[in-house]
Image 1: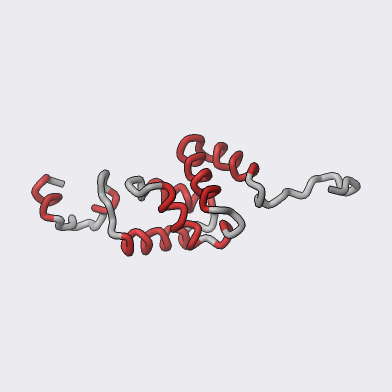
Image 2: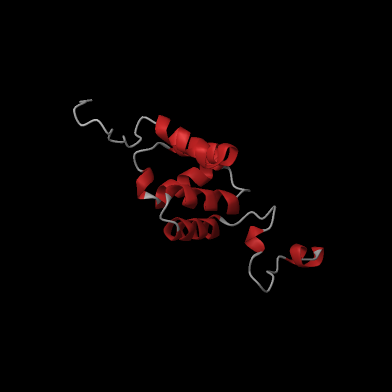
Length: 119
C-alpha cells in the first residue's frame, strides 16, 4: 500500500488494513474482532494467540480484559493472570503458555493415574 492511501485513511480493496503494523483500531472495532476470534477458536491457546498476533498495537492489559470478556474458560483467572498468559504465549510459545497456565491458583487440576492416592 502506498503512503497516500495510508494518509487518507482509506481502506484497501482487500480490507486487511487492520492487520498492518501500526494500525490502532477504534475500541468498538477491536472488540468486535476480538469477539469473532475468540468464537472462531475453541482452543484457549489458539484463540489467545490469534488475538495477540492480530492486535499487537494494543496493550496486553487491554487485550486481557477483552479476551476475558469473551472466553468463559478464563472466568476463574484474574486479569493479571491473563496478562501473564499473553506474555508467556508471546515469549515462550505453547510450552510457556502451558507452564504459566499450570502455575495459576485457579488452574484446573488434572486427575492423576493413581486411583488409590487421595489429595
